Every structure is written in structure tokens, then in C-alpha cells.
Image (cartoon, rainbow, N blue to C red; front, side):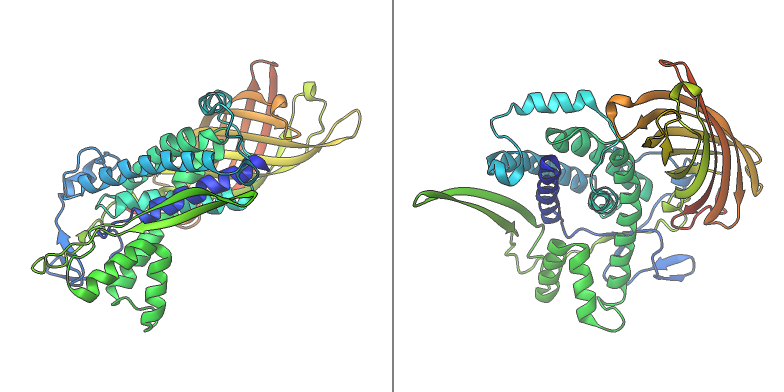
Length: 452
């Protein structure tokens, strides 16, 4: 509970910092609803269209994040990144200064030692509350994602930025001072952050293109923009009202003071927001960048999630009865031939001798190669590695290698069925387990599309 409270505080601080660092630079992307005349996209006057070289799609997974070539604002994204790193240091310092009974963090402990121990232990399958792992992390990942997306980068580049920030800045950076890096966070944070971040990005563009209204209501439109990006919405609103570029960027930070009050100490935390103001009357309000990525084959459609059921055939060395379990996967379907997924299985099993019930878990990262890629029914092979965990006790975890065969049936460009038979090998205990499972797969965005 102490670690959970500390992590919640850490996330809140960083969220406030990053929301505060939003700037008014914008970029529209795939899915823009502008009109097309003679093959040229015409966007509303709110945007300034920048042309791109269609050759970037010849190698769809090429990373341009470190080498912008199509008008992406590399200066902006790296400026934001530097600010976020400084905010991370400030967040750790603020938490260390807060009362121990509030944060659950012992300020007298050795921070570097805690950090080193957490890195050494991880990554592990964490036990955080579901709303932290599957709502908080996607939202936080979406904040990272929009930093790059609003700087004019493609979805793929924005995802790479999200992955780098969520992995090295967050899981193995700021949060590692508080807890051991998490396996599911390393996957959920960037992947579902991409899905949420792109939805938020596109939603904002749609509202802007409709004159800032939702269902004809300016109030609803303004409220939605505030929810999607509060500080940025305020800065943009002031610029729009004045017709001047008064606010170039916004920033937010927290400060802490301890004031003596009779026999007690009054601890205060302040939320501050800064808006650098310009005073040049002849400086017009700048227009956000709009880059048309409508033909980009790489979008949220390559992200897939599945749920299903399976049956295990466990090695007799475990002395556990075979049972049915629930399976969930989340991964990237790079093309009809290749995918990589995080696989999680969970069930309640009984011991053979005592009859005692215990929780069985298996999680692994695997890669799948599909045959007959142009057909609806595709056989595939899978190979990966992971761990088996009994009774939610990390002392009972077992490293495993796995491999198997499966069938993928495409039902729709967003839906498919998968069934597989996978063998799990534990080299330390010399065990051999098997699992047969079937899952229903859902693809986000456009799903599997014809560009492949």
C-alpha cells in the first residue's frame, strides 16, 4: 500500500508537469477531414499544410524521429523532452521532501540504493490496481505520444518516442525510485498510450475543424479541448481572442514549503503555471503545422488485443491438476506475416495431493510468423520466452522458453480468430508444459488494411 500510494503521487506530479509543458504548436495527421481539390488536401484556415515526400512509405517502419525530413518540429520535441527530464528530477525531490506518512517513502533511505535494487529485481509482473495499469498508464503514455505527434511526426515515430520515454524515462527512470519496473507497464504504457494518444489527437483536430464546437455547442467544444490538453487550450484561447501570439508556451510545476505553526508544521504544496507573454503587437498568431499522413500504412491498426480461453497440460513435477484458464494478449501486428505479442494466462488450479487451490499465471513475450499471408486462413509458428508464477509468489516463478503452432482466421479487417498449441520448457526444473488456447483478436484503428 505504501508503494502504491507513492507511485500514485509520483504519477500525479509528472502528469501535472507534462500537461503544463504543452505548447501551442499543432500538427494534423492521418484521418483529417479537410476537403480535397485536384488531389491537394485543403484544411481549414486554422492549419498550415506542409507537404511530405511519399517515398517515406517505401520503408514504412523507417524511424525519422532523430532525422526529421518532412517539416517535423524536431526542435520542439527535444525541447519538451529536456523539460520533462527536469520535471522528473523535481518530482523525485518533492516526494522526498514530503512527510513520510503522506508519501509512504522514507526520506532517510538511500535513494540510489533503492533505485539500484529495483533495477536489479525487475522487470516483474506487478500487482498495481487495474485502473493504474490499464487506465492511468495509457493516458500517461498518450501524453508522451502527443508531444511528438503535435510536433508533426508520423504515428510510428510518435510511438517510438512514447516507447523510449515510457521505458527509459519512466519505468527505468523516475518510477524506479519508487518500485520495480513492471512487465505489463513496459508494454501497456506505449501501446495503449499510442491508441489513446492518437484518438485524443484526432479528436482535437476534429473539434478544431468544426470551429471548436461539438454538436453545435461552443461550450462542449471548449470543455473537450480543456480535457484533452488544459494548458494548451488556455494558451490557444488567449492567442485566438487577442489575435496575437502572446503565449508561445506554457509550463507547470509544483513547489513545497514547510511552515512552523505553533507546535506543528504546516506542509503546503503549490501548483504553479507559467505562461511567457510576448509584447509584439505586429507579431501575428502563428498557425499550427498540418502534415497529411492519410496514406501512411503504419497506424494504430497494427495494435491488436485479444481475449480467450485455454487448457493446460502441466508437467507432473508440479503436482497440479490440469485446468482451464483465461488468456489475454496485446501486441503489434507489423504485417500479415509478422507479429509480436505479450501473452498472459491466468487460472485457479488445485494441487493433486492436498487439493489446495492456488493461482496459476503464465506471461511471455513471443514472435509469430504467418504463412499464406494473403489468405484469410494463415498457419503460423510462434516462439518466445517468459515466466510461470504460482500463488502470486515471486519466489515461485520459473523461467520458460516456448514454441508452438497456430492458425489465424481473418473474419473482418478488425476481427480475427486465433488458436494455437504451445509448449513451455523450463530449463532449470527440466519441465515441459503445454497449452491449447483460442482467442478473439481485435485490431484498433483501420485494422488490417489493403496497403499491406
